Every structure is written in structure tokens, then in C-alpha cells.
Length: 239
Ligand code: NAD
Image (cartoon, rainbow, N blue to C red):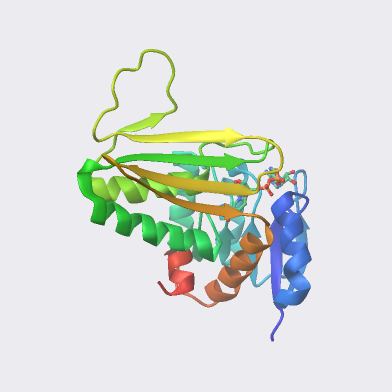
């Protein structure tokens, strides 16, 4: 297997370490390790993988477009402006942006879309996600992707982040979203479809960061040589 040369942003973090640990068995060489206070530069790399912080996105995009380095972005919590910078970069270089690199969660995305279509408007939609106590952004990027899928399926924009006090009855077309934080939870996501007399719950639980690392490396291998554009994990998996 040809070893691809990777620049890794967020190298000292949990996901950075998971990528470094997976490198040998996945046939990649992490040639540049970048973390806070390091200069962002991708000189010798075939591809850059980012699992750092949303605030790094603008610099990463500027450097990658200059050096024409394909990007794999796993970082979540981007602002609208940071997202615009990623979209602008994708006009010049290929970019895979995915809120979740696990195959299981991408199956959850497909199942959620299908269930929403089958069950229709009589089922109330709620999303519950849980992550470790160190996670910076909420709701998780994966939960936001689930929201986008449900909003498309149900033609609604109404979101309710948690509930407190006399909030009144639940709106028929609202989507509830709830973030649990604690301990070392790697990442749980449940989509609840609650109807009259029955409830369907779709749950994915990640028990190891290895699954995200292997997915990101797969995306890195895939994105090299692609035309400029914004891709996601469905493109990588050929779904
Ligand atoms: P972490 O806090 O353990 O690691 C982040 C690392 O990035 C830290 O070492 C930090 O010092 C570094 N960093 C912060 N700002 C930086 C900057 N401006 N430049 C360079 N380095 C910087 O977090 P983590 O658990 O590894 O997660 C990192 C990101 O990846 C988060 O946004 C998280 O939500 C996301 N994530 C995505 C997936 C996925 O499948 N897409 C999976 C897990 C985590």
C-alpha cells in the first residue's frame, strides 16, 4: 500500500492521537504534526487532516488553497463565516467535511432519513446526544447533521434546544435537541420518533475514537486527486 503523507492539525488532541495510533496499520505517514502555537504549513503533505478547533478553519483553508493541499475536516462547531471560508476553499481544492467519520453513524444518517419518511408527521422528533466532559461545542456536529436530515424530511426549521419552565405543549413540527456532557463518553446519538402508542429510537454509540480515525484516513486517501469541491462521508463511502 502506498504510504500517503499527512499533515495533521490538532495532533496533540484526542483525535490527533487516534490518527497517529492508526497511522501504521492504515498505511499513512504523519509527516507534519501541528497543534496550538505551531505554524500551519503543509509543505510535504499529500493531504491535511484537521481535528482541532473551529477557530483554526480560516488559517487552514488559506494555507491549503495556497499549497493546493486537499483537506479532510473533522472539526465541528464552525461559525457561519468559518463555514463560508471552507466552502470558498472547496472551489479551489477538494475538501471532505464530515461531522462524523464512522460508518455506523453514516448508516444512522440514512436510516434516520428513511424512518422520517416512513413515519410521517404524526411522530414527534427529538435528538439526544452525549459526549465526554471536555467537548467544547454543543450540540455535536453529528446532532446538527441529524437535524438537517430531519428538517429536510419534515420541511420544518423549528428547533428547541432543551426545555425549562412552563414551556407549554410541544409544537407539532418542532425538533427537540438535547446535549448530555460527562465522563469519557466517546459519542452517543439517539433519534427518537415518538408517536401515539409507540416509539421508535435509533441509537448509535461510539466506544472508541479508532472508528473516526480510520474513517478520516479513508477520506484522506479518497480525496487526493479529486476535483475541487465540497464532499462528505457519503461521497467517500459511495452511498
Ligand atoms: P481535543 O480538545 O482533544 O483536541 C483538539 C486539539 O486541537 C488540541 O490538542 C488543541 O490544542 C488543538 N488546537 C486547538 N486550537 C488549535 C488551533 N487553532 N490550531 C492548531 N491546533 C489547535 O478535541 P478532540 O476530541 O480531538 O476533537 C477535536 C475536534 O474534532 C472537535 O471539534 C470534535 O468535535 C471533532 N470530532 C469530530 C469527529 C468526526 O468524526 N468528525 C470525531 C471526534 C471529534
